Picture: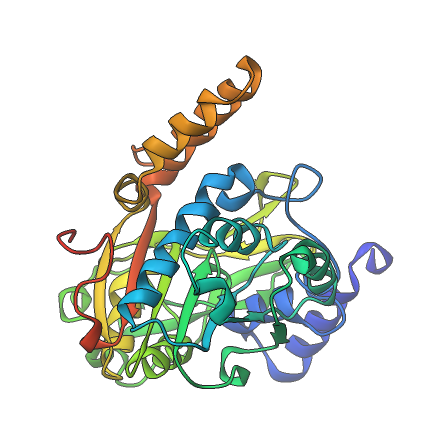
Length: 368
């Protein structure tokens, strides 16, 4: 039985044996970023041969429109001669490749760019380097956002926050208890509640959720990334965060695992599946705002891309394409802006964080 376990599963069992049940956030961190066995460390998880497909891989339109948004923001910043374009979790480099290719139509923008990619995966760094080398843009890689040099900057993060570790607490009769990973009677991993309630936890929760019924689950992330985003852009910069999640505080368990383009058990085969949880955009915005930044949105991805002109871009691409290619473009267009509870255009949201002096950002002028 032990031989069938992944190396990471054996390591997690060892840690639980030493320190006791493990908070879900720590389990998620190990599954995704363990230095030897983490999911993101040794593989390219994207595409038909991987585990999932992100929006930039669905259509070039995604990256192209983000590129034009970045160029418009750069002009609004006063067209600085040296601007840091930062992408968090660049995947295969597809979005940034399409973005900078499209943005070359804006005079001076490409020449002003130094590209900074925040990526922990050695495997993906190699893919990104190959993908972006033809752009002839100065590029540096970093393990974390804090390592990127300061100065005027535009930060993009697509499906990055959802993969950051999430904590969970469950309401019981004596208060809120952190949810943890333990080893059950059958020898398998189980989710349990820590025996002691979290002290003073209820007073730190959003006021509207404090009287939740027993059994309710509340999720939260450490706000380090949001604070750093707010700190970086508050003088002369902006960030655009696109991810799936909820616009306002809420309750519920959103932890999920994906492998082979299908949902799977998050407790099964740790390190071999992608673990994510919904983004709380209200919490993200409030943390960034506390650092002096201004928040724009969140808005639905559908609204963001319709405002950016995705209909016109799709029409232009279809006009010059063969019939079968035009049909693919239409399918991709519809998928990116699909509404409904599970549609990407509805489920995915976008929030911008920027220096207050920039005023209303492109596309966000009258969206709320």
